Image 1 (cartoon, helix red, strand yellow):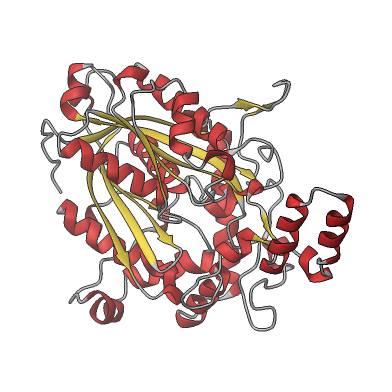
Image 2 (spheres, rainbow, N blue to C red; image 1 turned 90 degrees about the horizontal axis):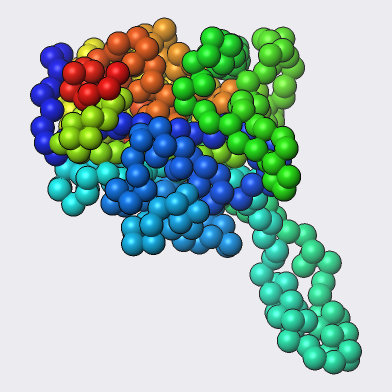
Length: 443
């Protein structure tokens, strides 16, 4: 694979940053999504050394749509110091939301409609609310409208015990409307289809923790993570992801019971990603702008692809999407030096690896005579993945892209792919190309 020449309107990523990723209910639980996003946007902008008034658009992925900031991108952008005249919008492609934000930014740059776009995503999964039953709506409305003691007592008399049994909105959201399976149950479908053992899943999960801890200990994560302080006094700093476990072991993982299919299953909370809070952002610019302003270029957005598939097998989305992304970029899997596949579940990633190298899958599912090609495990998720780091749904796509670009720079790898499965039966993939330092102006 030979490197492509940069054109004026090629979309390049010049900088990025993310918050620490923290398990829901822990360090970041009190920080709303718009503030997490504000932090990532502002740091990405500062690392790019671009003035806020030079940004043409802000695009943010988010799935929970918090009530206090339904225009989340706009709220976060204004808090980050972006001028009022700069537009912003929020999008939702479930797990692929931040990846979609990056590709939307690249499309605007390629079309000549923008020179610099801030793109990313965020999720505060700690703050996803509880849902009361619909039967409680009328009594609550009556109570709110009551103006006398008698009216209030009458309204209270309309409540029934079932009205005070809320459900967790997150559980509803993680259950597919079409097939009726939650995301963990779809991982069980793939474990059975591809014959993936519990031991294989646990070994993959342990590797995720080991690699994430190694990346932190050698200082690699400091390039992407910006610390933040906790309100209200801002006396406590959160500087690291709190998901990777120092004491994780195969023995400990083996003791966990299957969570989604308690009788016959193999997917546990130990070989699945945790529910997580966090935000990530990147600065997407045209090559002409980066060259003119002597900006460092992390990489070029070479191509991308999104694909649909059966919701019950949604975890295979990376295979379908990568096939399209590689074709869009004009390269093959053999050309790719580093891979990031989001670790929603160990079973899901292992199923994807099998499908990538399966002639039968290629013929029956992709309409190809040859498989996409085997992925070397030593080139996959080399800094760990979501099983250790977590998966703040709206943010993960940007985290994958940023992690990949920084590791490509460290290893001087020419081509990388960031891909993930998307709840609802989709997949997304992004092909990123390392740009020689001479193409920008700063190392």
